[in-house]
Amino acid sequence: MYVLWAPWRMEYILKEAGGCIFCQKPREARDVENYILHRGSTCFVMLNRFPYNNGHLMVVPYKHVPSLEDLDDGEALELMKTIAFSIRCLQEATKPHGFNVGLNIGKVAGAGFEGHVHVHVVPRWEGDTNFMPVFADTKVVSEALQTTFNRLKDTWTRLGLGSRDEDEG
Image (cartoon, rainbow, N blue to C red; front, side, top):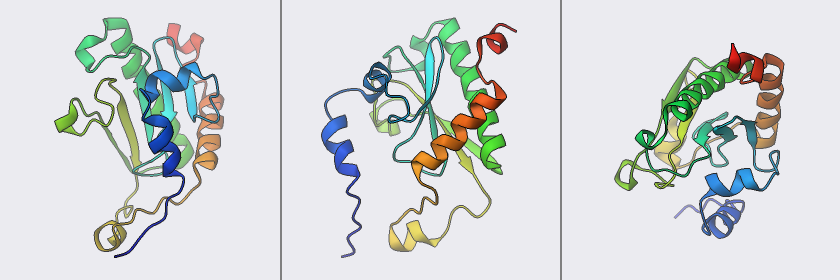
């Protein structure tokens, strides 16, 4: 049996098991440490700590609800605009060839946090899938999370994404 050591996951196992990360992380006011890229009025964007691909973002409403239909019209609109801002930021910062954008509603759909709806925005590049997950049951993430976060934060700020002026216009 091949054992892949991932000691950083213990933080996730021990710390995150105590509650909803999407409620806890924004309250901690440690945005850099928690990889919170943007805070809007009704939702925020954070880098996935355990990404499917480099730059894997999650757009999350502050309201703890299990599904999209539980959001009011203003919350749903801001969520969609923030997803679009996230795609624009990733396009500028990482030049992907495409995106997977989606959400899992309910445990059987794969929701890891089924009580708090969130949208995954995953950049994709031609050739980003390879033999490693199939033959070695290993996913290669080619850049440190902090480096990716810094690049995206700089790009988000430079582009003025989700700023009050843009939201009102």
